[in-house]
Length: 371
Ligand SMILES: Nc1nc2c(ncn2[C@@H]2O[C@H](COP(=O)(O)OP(=O)(O)OP(=O)(O)O)[C@@H](O)[C@H]2O)c(=O)[nH]1
Image: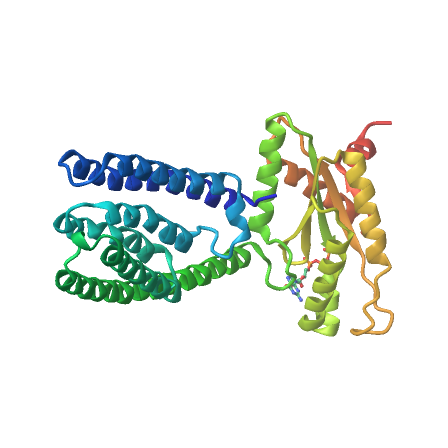
């Protein structure tokens, strides 16, 4: 299965392969004009059309069938450049006027210009050399098989000019390839920096949990899911009991350590879709998507009992802590600040009734109802 990014790249490759066909057709048109003015045989114009169609449809098919994914350079830039040289070289061989050939020879540079944007320096040098060798081969075979169409003195001048231009293109291509590499590296560094910034902006430094901002975003997400008819969610407001005493007795560092260990324990206890974060000071907020009040109370109770069982021996042998929890289920007639406010009321009730317990709004209503 392809990743989203790879699928997008593959679609881009298919589009590029199709647009390259336009370039091939323009090359063909040049030879069609040569045929029209009588310096290129019609038979070879037809063969050139077939070759051009074969190369362009062939590459499009390779991308369509994803065969290119087996190669290191999935864009097949070098392969496209090398193969696209063959049809024009073939046609140049049959061109019946040496003067026309010198101008049409310019076509050989087109793939090199495309390569400037996509090849690495080494690849570019190889293709440049291949380009030059192809031209020597063309002149050599003409001299051997069709001597009437070659003037070696003119061809020598032409080949030298070709060598100079290819050399310059290799230099420019190498420079652009270096720039591309630098740009790519900078982009990766920027992406990493952005990731770090995003993480820092949503993480509480002391505990590594989501911070208040990230928590509010999560609740907002759940809130809009519910208003669109999705399943409900519940929140648990968790507060460490008599935390001030720990700070006062063992120092602030010990207090920090308790918060860190507590955070880790809560993280370990949760499902993947749940979210726990530091709401402020020694207060934590647990967001439980797709969870009704009873389920949330069960979860909160399990958490409370787990905290009761924790030992902080590194601070003092046998040191334990407890937490109080207020639970509320989101009600579709309110905004999420009101849901948190109800959880806070329930937490307040838990504190008032002796701490180390889980309370909901229903408990408060039940106890205050007339007998
Ligand atoms: N070590 C440490 N202490 C913190 C941090 N944030 C808040 N506190 C302390 O947490 C304590 C909270 O105290 P209180 O609000 O009186 O509550 P409590 O002592 O837990 O008592 P109850 O909540 O009523 O059970 C204060 O002493 C704060 O200074 C923190 O990041 N690290």
